[in-house]
Length: 444
Ligand code: IFM
Image (cartoon, rainbow, N blue to C red):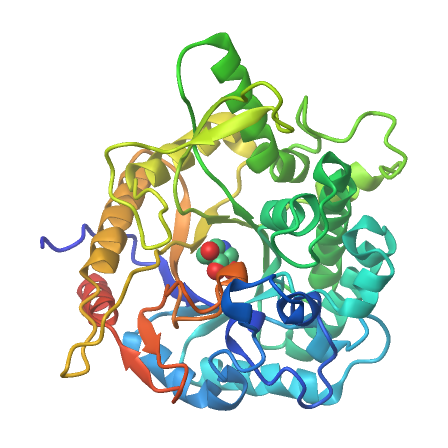
């Protein structure tokens, strides 16, 4: 395989994880219950009834995991903070042991010269807040800003870069519209207030983080290039609606202060208050983009509850999850965002990129995950093309450091550069880990 082209010398290389997917220790040191504890323990919600109770036991094994980061040679580590560890009921005084955990983690990262990039919300909402309506309740936005201030107060002397929300579209769609993720509600289009309240919480948190001394604040959105299935007007309209929901609903209000037509809250929506749009559009220092694949969209068949239908993308490889592998989609997405938002687009970090593979362990204990190497190589080349086309991309984070709890799929999808044996918690770097380490050394 040819070596990768050179990225800018200041380019930030990292890997990402999320609290509920790796930490375990669900009932330790005063952690409160989250919606994912409730959801994963409910019968039939996750594959094989898997839960994050133990996950990768990162809460106890974090020194080993940070040592892996050092061995890999990344400059940054994106992790998320479990809100219920900090405020077990989502409000009120902080739980000192919860803060201590992230304090130690940040200290160790900084000592190794690895930039910590915490995400404040990666879906593990305190259950007490959900009991009061979750993100359907405006009050949750204000609780989120308070939590942001508490965390910034403790970590802000060592953490400058922050991410407010991870993939609010996925949390709204899967958690509140379709019910396939926690909290498992099936509200369909009535889930729209969840978009607004997450965005309001984001804007309030940006302000709280800045007041706490943050130097670079961003939101991370999951974005996909949308491919209409044909030139027909019906397919083009369906694709525009899908693009509106998936991409623009969480980008337009943040970047240009307006909801997109067709999919945003109606003008008279009672949950959109005067001044909210200004808070949501509080200027950002950067934008996080998680890219996995493009989406091919056609007009919905008669009788469908949705105005679009997603079709397979033919003729390309697929991941173990069945997701199409289209590296050029990353370039097209980034160039398209630059064209759409122009000067309103801040610098971009790719905060997640990766794939699940059907890993096998050889008798020698090796994992030859060549599909992951191909995936990363292809996506980094496409990213380099986007930078060459003038898109200001400042960093790339692989999802994920470790195999982990893949939400409703439980432990059945493995996204890690490092294999986790869930019986023994043995960590085994895969071939992709060695490949990335060598690629990063070649960049320096
Ligand atoms: O594991 C998830 C992550 O939590 C959010 N982005 C997509 C990943 C793969 O599905």
